[in-house]
Amino acid sequence: MLKHLGQLFFIGISGKALTEDEKKFIVENDIGGICLFSRNLEDPKQIFDLCQEIQSLKSRQASRMPLFIGIDMEGGRVHRLQPPFTQWPAIKILGDLDSSSAAFKFGLFMGDELRSVGINLNFAPCVDVLTNPKNEIIGDRSVSTDPEMVGKIASGLARGYIKSGILCCAKHYPGHGNTLLDSHLDLPVEDVARDRMEEVELPPFKKAIRSRLDFMMTAHIKYSNVDPDWPATLSKIWLKDILRDELRYRGLIISDDLDMKALADNYDKADIPVRALQAGCDVLLYCNEPDSPPVAIEAVTRAIDSKELDSAEIQASIDRVLAVKKKKLMNQEPVSLKEATTIIGHPDHMRLASSLRDGELPEDILAK
Image (cartoon, rainbow, N blue to C red; front, side, top):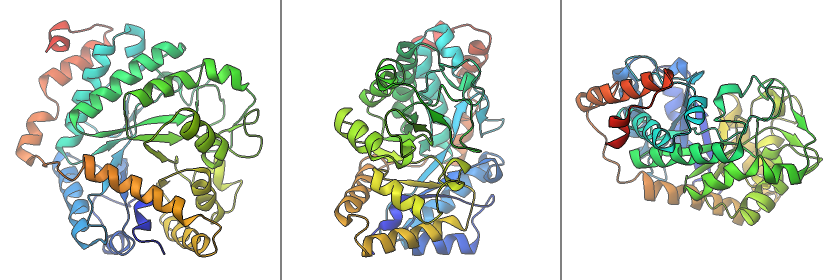
């Protein structure tokens, strides 16, 4: 087993505090990150305490590295944190208002609130171009139907998150804006031409890459004209040939949840993590099924031992994860809970969110 292999795994937890079994699993396997959902979140103090508890485990892990603590906070329908946290509108409004300065402040203010309670990674922004108006899975999670606008606003959001001191993640590469199927429930298959994707779906991801974000999340969608055999998460063509070699992305590639039915109903549970790593994923995300990470770690270990997985490539992924943590997380000073309460729901944050909902831009806040 390669040293620090568990750094490639990002897992969910069951409740509002860690169980003894969860602590044991995270420590013994040197797990790299924890993803928080509504089931884990109550109020600022509880979230603050949970993040402190998670980070306390690093001193007992082999890597002794801070853990990624991630959350889906896009605004609108995908909004895990409830009041007194600022309630942000869907990012479509930023495209409607055509304001990169508002996007920057949106990311900055949201990031400030996340970081104040110990969350250090936001699985946002959504960089999908809404090319199908009947696509309710994405809908107002997309900035616009215009690729240029999506890239402009997504870049502003990313710069805001980064300025706040948290990591961010463009999703869902190479584009989820055209599908009618929800990959949580089924495997979407798209027959759009590569040329069309070069003009529409890919430009916003190129812009997001230039904003120097640290994560890119893959889509569980098969684009049959580009790779007829594999969905993007499991596709060497999409991840190695295009994202790494053509687009020259150097950050971390994280899968969407590998237990989603798009993959789970079509591939063997033990084969999925192995194939995702072969394709070029650096980090494997498991959100809701506690039995899956142990199966995945065992399968990946076997595949390394049998040389089905290239140990040098896996080591390169581990090194990329550790490099991001050393550069971005090692020197982060946590704020106190008292200070966090002054950041959460700050009047400027509340007024920006309210103004955006009303289709207005508060110029005094944007000028600060």
